[in-house]
Image 1 (cartoon, rainbow, N blue to C red):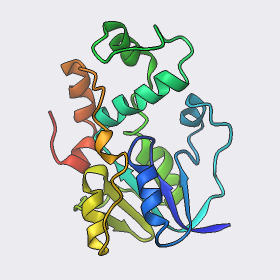
Image 2: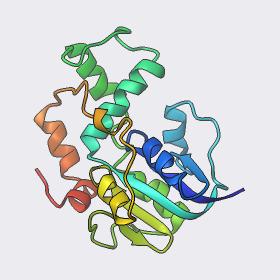
Image 3: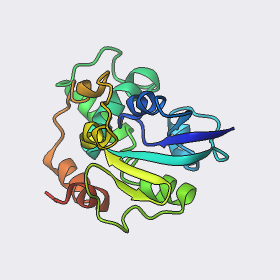
Image 4: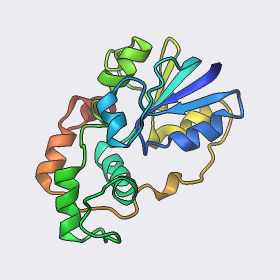
Length: 195
């Protein structure tokens, strides 16, 4: 089946909300991993959507630390078999240690090269990102921070369910972790700063 839109984004970037928004305009398929087998297997995903076809693709960028922490909690509760205890608190030292040692921290920052480029044939670093979105042929790139403005640019409003809850249960990560992720090509390109 050919879809009108393929929402092709890492987990915890607002892809469910974007899916709901785009259904107003046509059929939507929301996927996380089409090619990157290592990322898919991290979540127990057995099949990749390599043959997914759509008229337009949309990918959503998000601050990598906020995305990682948000995704970590879902990973911790659903997939982690060796977690320290089942009901953690964000300030628990064992949870921070588990986050730093067991979680895959490169899932968002490597997404453009390992997912977007193979599927869409586009280097999303080749154009400066200009909010609320940047267009590459049939691929739209936006940031989570810009999705309401993105909706307004087409004369609509974005559904708010879930979007406001992304920063709950924050983990206080060390400065070295911030330095590492905020000095990546991904962060510097989409947020125009480094730490």
